[in-house]
Amino acid sequence: MSSSLNKFLKPAIIGAVTALVAATTVNAADISPAVVFDMGGKFDKSFNQGVYDGVEKFKTETGIEYREFEVTNETQREQALRRMAQRGANPVLGVGFAQAPAMEKVAKEFPDTKFTIIDAVVDLPNVQSVVFKEHEGSFLVGVLAAMASESGKVGFVGGMDIPLIRRFACGYEQGAKHANADAEVIQNMTGTTPAAWNDPGRGSELSKGQFDRGVDVIYAAAGGTGVGVYQAAKDAGKLAIGVDSNQNYLHPGTMLTSMLKRVDVAAYNAFKQAMDDTWQSGIQVLGLAEAGVGWALDEHNEGLVSADMKSAIEAVSAKIVSGDVKVHDYTSDNTCSY
Image (cartoon, rainbow, N blue to C red; front, side, top):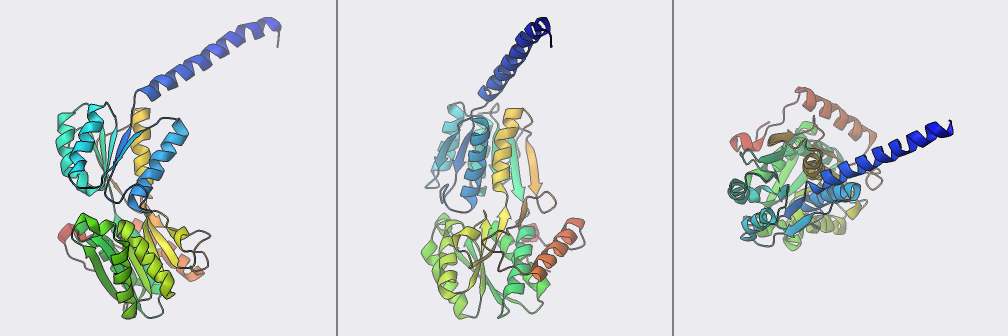
């Protein structure tokens, strides 16, 4: 390359890089994201922590910091969302169905602020609602539970007794009976208040009661309460199934698998789309077809999942996606049928 051409190109390249950096800086400055975690906290090893992992990934990749607040009682939700909006946060991410009433009210007050809610629908022009087909993912782990069970009895421990958690239970029961028509599914809910999401002691008690009745695999959809379920399974030499995040690492050799609910992806996307100016309001429904739910296989549980179990999951997953197997959604009519 001639020296004269080199002299010409260097300023051009430097100018292009400077413009790119400036554009990126402006783009990053356009958003000031915030997240309001719900009861149980961001380190609940389950639902909230999945969201935390997603927003942390965003921060690591972009260098953009985010504001955060952990709700510890029900009265804080509306105040926390409003405070974020007042301070100029945009977008504001609300975690959990229980934030829906507060978000609906606050989003109306701040129509120019983008809000995303995970696990609920708020029908407003500045709200993005992300919900999941938990029954589909729960069906898969129900198949695994029935195939791993030696007694033919599998259990379910839910958190707060609400239709959303009944959806998990119903999908799980359908999956278990798909694999073994004679399977018995024993279910318990932890409570009827938000405290049910963070009561490991009660989770342990309910699990021990199920083990006494012959259950040898328990699926927990109970937030932080699930920690007690998993410990009880380890102590009893039984199997447990995690939820939302990949919880296989908690007790390798005890955790058969985890039902993955990709709230981490939903959280990451909410911030990333706002940054890229591709964020859209409306409802997003994520199931197996959209890779929004699934099951976890890694070094912590690979010894518990046989080749036959893997093949069964692959086959039924394809049938659910194609529509050949239809998983009943409890929340459609508050019944569980197969």
